[in-house]
Image 1 (cartoon, rainbow, N blue to C red):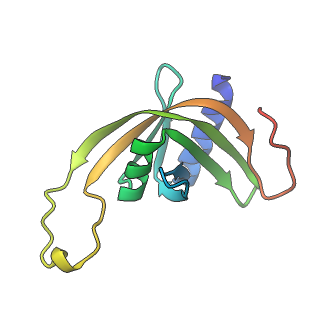
Image 2: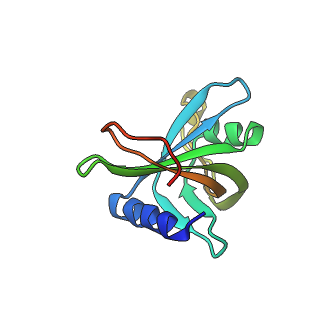
Length: 134
């Protein structure tokens, strides 16, 4: 994998302030979530930090395949990083106490870092494009 392309995607994500994370559960249904931070570790693995919703975490436990999309709609420039989750680390935990929460749907209580071994980088844009690896 060309680190320069990954660094370009990370820089775009940093400028935009968000990325999209797609996972697929054991039932075969996809789930899309937003995350706030994309980085690279020293081995060139993508690191995504977010308060992931329970569906994302559950999907990753059943199926490590993941798609990370960074896209700037103003310039129609973007990247789709395809790979496999290698680790899901817990960074911070809320105390879980919210008065009246027994009647509310559950919200993310753990900030996590997903470590993804990127296998393929594709161009991502609204305009017609090829899905050939970059």
